[in-house]
Each structure stands twice: as structure tokens, then as C-alpha cells.
Image (cartoon, protein in one colour):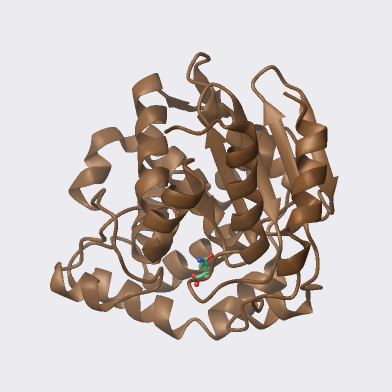
Length: 304
Ligand code: GLN
């Protein structure tokens, strides 16, 4: 497969969408980023890497971090996690609160905000040094010790994080948060603030594409079956109320973030990360989705 050629063609074909959509404005720090960036990196399970555009520029991973949280909390407490979080698509926005009230404080799945806030709480309870260990795990996954939290991003998000605070309060009211609400929120916003580029994200996601090797990073171990289930959750829940659309257009398990990044895996073949800050109304990168749609169309490979 000539991935270099395919990435080049994709770049040319997505140009008509270059000005479509707006970057997320509810996190002021995100508006400091040039919205016209675009980068992509694909990494095969044989370890070959193909990149295009701004693939070395770091951006806030935002909700893509929910996959790291899921790997860590599922690895640490196994199926106990499912007593506190479901595995059904929500069909609602990532920051929806009304479903959480209807379902009495049990988030629909781990990849919406409510689910990630419960996972942050789990990790605060089971880890000795949660912030340090979380970062260390992500660094090991992508093989780069330079990965950092972006403190001003995290602080800015806390300052305006009224809805996430409301969600955490709702969870606490229903007995689904053990720790102090403020600690949970701070930890969650720091996870979202982590800066990574497309190359680093593609590396971090490769272990989810590769069921043949044991998943073992920094003391977090997942069985083949757990990796399979994480992929299933990404497939059904990774794009909130656009999960069906992403499945239909792209056909890969993946996860988006409001920083404009999308990471996806083609099981047993490759991982891919794409970044472009302009978002559609559902909070997913316009060019990122288009690029991945073209990738699975041109290669004629997806999970379907
Ligand atoms: N930090 C963001 C929030 O909680 C993450 C949302 C996202 O990337 N979809 O609103």
C-alpha cells in the first residue's frame, strides 16, 4: 500500500473544506491556536510511519485522553468499572447532563465527559500519585518523555468549566464520586490539556491496533480481550452523537477531541492520528473526519 501517495491525495482532496467549521471557543486557550493547521500521521503495526502537514505540532488532546483513562482504569480495576459506567452509545452531546439525571448518576459510557469524570475519580482512588502516574503512562505509550500537561489550558478550562462542575456534582449526589469534587475536576482538566502531536498520538494508539502483542505499559496491563473491548467502545461511543456517522463514513474505532484531533485504529493494520482545529457542530474536526473517510475509501480497508 502506497500510504505516502494516499496521504498526499487526501491532502489535496480535503482543501475545499479548509475554511469549514470553527475551533472550539468555550475553552479560551484553544482560540490561541491557528485554526488552519492540518496534520496527519499513520503508523503500521510493522512500525512504518507516514506523515503529512503539521504532524509535528502539538495540540491539546482533550477528549482523546478519555481512551488513556479507560485503558488505565480498566487495567487497574477490570470489570468493577462497569458497576459505575455503562457501555452504550449516548446519542447525546459529550457534555450532556440530562441523561445522567435520568439514569441516576451512571454515565452511559466512558468516552463522554461524565464517564471520564468517574474514571478520573477511580484513578484518584487507586493510584498513589495520580497526576504523575497518568502522565508517565501516556509518555510510555507514545515513547516520548517530553509530553506535558498544559497548565494554562487546564486552569482556563476550570475557570469556565461550569457544566463539567455540574456533571461532577450530579455524579457525587448519586454516590458515583468518592473523592473531592474539585480534585476530580482538576485532574480531568489536566488530562484533557495534555499536548501531543499526530506522530505521538499515532504511536500511543498503535498498541490498541495490535492485538498480537501484550499490552503492558508502565505497570498497566490489558488482556487481548480488554483491548478488543476498548476498540468496541471507541467504535460505538468515540464520537458522541456522531458515532453512527463516523462509523458510516470512516468505519474505524476512534476518538475525537475538541482540540481538533482524532485518533483511530485499524485493528491488526495501523493507527492514525489527524489534527485540524475547525470543528463541525458536534465538536468533531471537519477536515479530520473527511481525511479519515478518504483514507478508508482509498485503501478499501476498514473494519467493515
Ligand atoms: N475538556 C473538554 C470538555 O470537558 C473535552 C471535550 C471534548 O474534547 N469533546 O468539555
